[in-house]
Length: 420
Ligand code: RNT
Ligand code: ZN
Image (cartoon, rainbow, N blue to C red):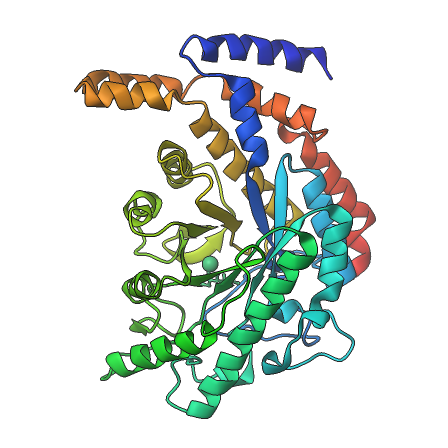
């Protein structure tokens, strides 16, 4: 390892140890945190069901940066490149629309075998997989309603999809040896004010009860449900609102709740929801995203929201209760860089949180030394975290600082450029 990196690390280690923080220990913890990379950043949420998927369900990727993945092989190659430039542990988050089977089955016909390619690939890389049923970009979701649709036939179709997706999740967990989280998000809602806001919610609750009517092995699969406040085309009403799913998760005790950072009111932070919810439920799934003015799914940057989320998880001692998955899609920049930027930032935010002397700060708080609480947390923001981060990257044989970018540019020149 470059001597300058070790020297800077040793100096930083000493500074942190003066406030009672063990940097080696912090890195050990950071190394154990898995970040789930969302496969859909690699091709603008297109999937492999058809040649040209028209996105629907309020999901929109803007931009036409060249080189998007067109096949499973291309997507896997791109994910490999991204993972080689991110230190620590990753999982990969798969959507049902990324089916990899010669004869592609409709959503109500999917089988674990249709995703065997993903499993083989994950096994080759020693990583776990997560799963998501796909309730959008499909003719049967064109009314803007799926599980809450008034037509029982449409509901049945989507209920079957939900059930089968959980079997895929269980298969993922069994095969990879790492628990799969199967997250359900539906686009259901109305553009304009519905008269009956209750009936769709009753139908959704009943549909979910059917989907979760059988158990999967919790060692292999865990289920989660994701709320939203509005979407494009569902501005006035969303069936699966936060209160709806919070009530559902808490009353049924079968599913985790998912908090997507972009699914609340524009200035509403999800950070504090973590401690509030963990009082009542054992685990949570987070979709780490970045909304700008709306649920825009921008690449995650090191902003206050990300820092607050990471601090909340660490200060609540909840690292083993919160699953972390990235969720955004930017088609205006190199898609591999998008994964790397979001993942590395999430890790940096976690590291920064892990480098706080949490027990001492909690003590100051209980001692009513609120002056120290404020003064110290502000000073800690300027401690030499960068040297610790560089050391973490170097020990994982991943380029330090901005040096990963040259590798992405090289991949763009040699691989992405040939994709027409
Ligand atoms: C949509 C939700 C959902 C999707 C993915 C593709 O608003 O955030 O999580 O982004 O399922
Ligand atoms: Zn999400």
